[in-house]
Amino acid sequence: MTTRIERLVTSGQFTLDGGTWDVENNVWIVGDEREVIVIDAAHDARAIAEAVDDRVLKAIVCTHAHNDHIDAAPALADLTGAKIWLHPDDLPLWKLTHPDRDPDNHLSDGLVIEAAGADLTVLHTPGHAPGAVCLYDPGLGTVFTGDTLFQGGPGATGRSYSHFPTIIDSIRDKLLTLPPETKVLTGHGDPTTIGAEAPQLAEWIARGH
Image 1 (tube, rainbow, N blue to C red):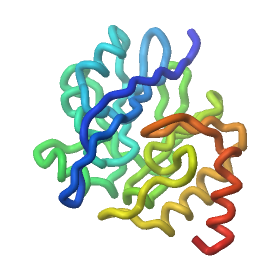
Image 2: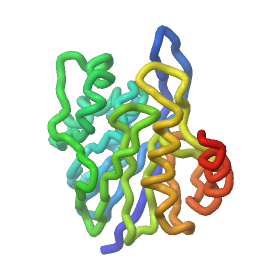
Image 3: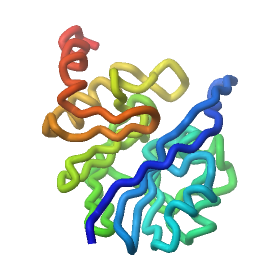
């Protein structure tokens, strides 16, 4: 069976530092006809469960713990029996949304999460959030970047728990080392490639951030 990547767009709100914004999130479903992984359970647990359908959900992986990426994770876990994975450095953010429910498992740099022929290697990429991660599958030629890297540049760093020099270091050390043809599938908006983003990122790095 062929491993494939499915995109589901869900709508909701992002809330932090006393502000609230309407957002659309990309929910990525990676797997085959038997089993899948969900990356970022955003806003609508039932819609995600319907997209998973009768396949086994092996894991719910959170690229970071901003509420718009995790708000549906516990409900999806309850619907499917899947475990929630989060980097422990993002537990303070997680607790802002889910004070009474902990993630089930901790992500760490270099950990590989497997399902249906996909091998997702965890890249710890702090900056947008302390526990932000990207998930790289060389076989699929794809990296799921959450809010670390978008078409047009790095994720936002103007709010609590974020730091611009750190996100640039993460992108330089963990993402720009990937093959330029690597597809970048983001937490919001359209895909890009490492090669397409490299020139502008290189300028920021050369200027010392």
